[in-house]
Structure formats: structure tokens, C-alpha cells
Length: 96
Image (tube, helix red, strand yellow):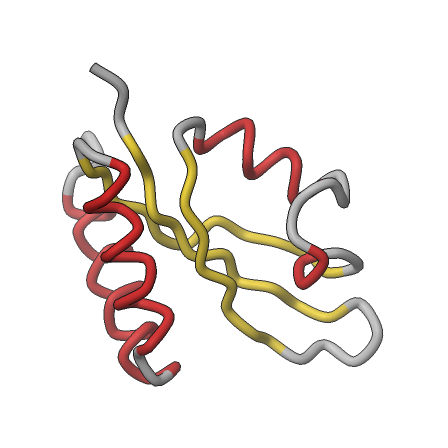
């Protein structure tokens, strides 16, 4: 059974250093991230330094699309809360 991913990219403008967030979904997270990095992803991410800062998995395309829409509707402050909680969780799971 395939997994579906919703993800958030931190996008830093190469022109002025502004930081923005991009939310998307895919079935192949690492391939999609590489597409973004190579300029083959969404136009929004082109010409920016990218960092994958958040992802979650879902079992159905319908669920992942609903969650993507939900995250996109959040103000950036709420997105940063999600990202920071995810980062802390990942740090807590690192081997000692």
C-alpha cells in the first residue's frame, strides 16, 4: 500500500534572503524534493534555497489532500509551530 506525504519546504530567496514556506503533497517525498531543488517542481520554489522542514504520512490521497489544504489555510505562525514541534520530535528520536 503506497503512502502519501504532505510536506513543508522552507524557501529562502537567493535575491533578498526572505524566508517563506511552501506546502505540497506527493507519493515520493525524496524524489519530489529533488525535483524542487533542480527547479522542476512548483514555480514558487524556483530560484530559492530549499530545506525540507516538515512531513507527515497518510494512507489515502484524499486524506493527504485534505491535510495539505488545511495546512495551507494556516497562518505562517501556526505552520512554524508545527515545524518546531516536528523538529523537537525528530531531535528526541536521535540515537544517543
